[in-house]
Image (cartoon, rainbow, N blue to C red; front, side, top):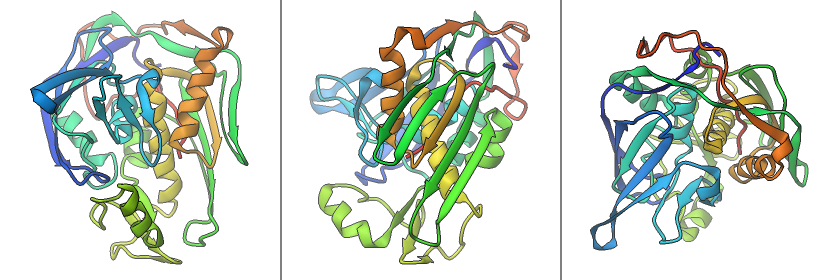
Amino acid sequence: MKLGYQTTIRDRVSISGFGVHSNAPASLVLHPADANSGVVFLRSGLPGGRERLIEANWSKVSQTQLCTVLGDPTGASIATVEHLMATLAGLGVDNVMIEVDGPEAPIMDGSAAPFVAAIDEAGVVALSTPRRCLKVVKPVRVERGAAYAELRPAERGLSLDIEIDFSVRAIGRQRKTIDLDAATFRSEIARARTFGFVSDVERLWKMGFALGSSLENSIALDGERIVNPEGLRYADEFVRHKMLDSIGDLALAGAPIIGAFKSYMPGHALNVRVLEALFADRSAYEFVEPARRQPAHAHVGSGALALATYAAEVD
């Protein structure tokens, strides 16, 4: 850990777009929050002008099909939170209130880069309260057919080891391993876009998904051909995006994870299930406060922030 104190954003910042699945307009306003607040969504625009607070926590996950949805028993929900959650985790933002006026977070360009830009605009500051981390002390593993996700103990930070294997040659077998910190998140993960197959579009539309998907926010594959005229941002952009999704899902642990995450053919469901398995076994984890090296209330420059606090794997 480079910093032992909790953080928040310096100023409020707004982000607007539309949902990739709902195609509904969506505006987010990120607000600074006090220490120990965590990440909380304020879902407005509900019937009757209602508003609801929804904690960004694995226990609030109501759906994991094609995206991660947080909800509560009243029916209030916010979908596709994974890219924003990954950004907060990757840049080490512990406390923030996210006001959202629609059913889904905006997809932007299909990556986390626009959210990184928004956090940079707001700035990140350290608070005076020590950061509490979730340390994995015993391996946990979940499986679905050949796919699996596991968390294992590590001495510090969060490492990721993710592998995907598609029959489509344009993707094929890809594997990526990193030790996650802010610099690595910015350079290797944040710009990786979501992807999908043209052959699936009509089926997804009938299911109510991908209504806002386009070449502006997704990599589209038609057979063996990548449709986007600009091509890929990375040769292995597909596994990098899976890693991005996993970082966002694992951020729902409620505290930075100290551990090693490994997954083969990950997905939102597996990512959430491995958190469920971890918290189901009280002997598998403990909460710790890493050594503190940062003066209280110091400003944390967006480019210099280097927190090895979260790791993840993806769908």
